[in-house]
Length: 218
Image 1: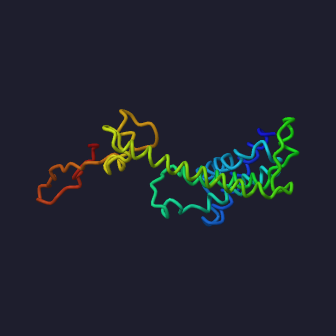
Image 2: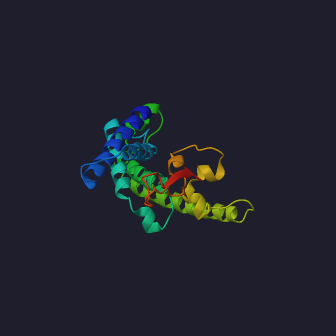
Image 3: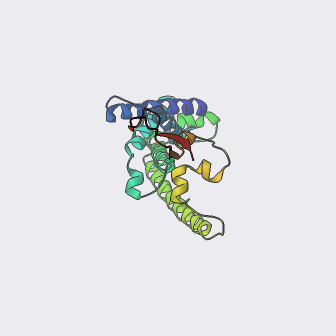
């Protein structure tokens, strides 16, 4: 059941994200967005995979992807530099999945292992929704505090730093910290230096149509 739920949520997550992009971007969508939708669906179903039916797993994947996709400006609001959108996908997506687990968990699925009884709101156990909310608050607070402490420690360890300089960020970390390029096509946008050549003149003294310069890589 968990395997079916996982794949179902990933599929509907992809559909949800692409649908939002299609509406917001003028009937266009992207492959990267579809992949992010899959990730959002997988994150959302993680806490619920063994507790919900397949059709509700589809709902969780779809809703999680839609919510996460609509949170597009969260990094700007929080003033966080998160190029991979980890917070948006995993934090917000995880919160959605945990909350909906409290709503959609059902004993008919959890009892498939023969021992676990986990009724949620759909089974009339509304208090589970409140417990899930409390869990989200506690885990988020713990993660925030511990992450801040670890980053503060890293900041003051010699040789460690939280950010690269502006030049390295513009050129790409592959070129700054590795001897070869791993991802992307940065070699196509390497600095270009133009070297001027003497301008040839005709017998009349006017410039000819010869090439006045050439571009070579620095």
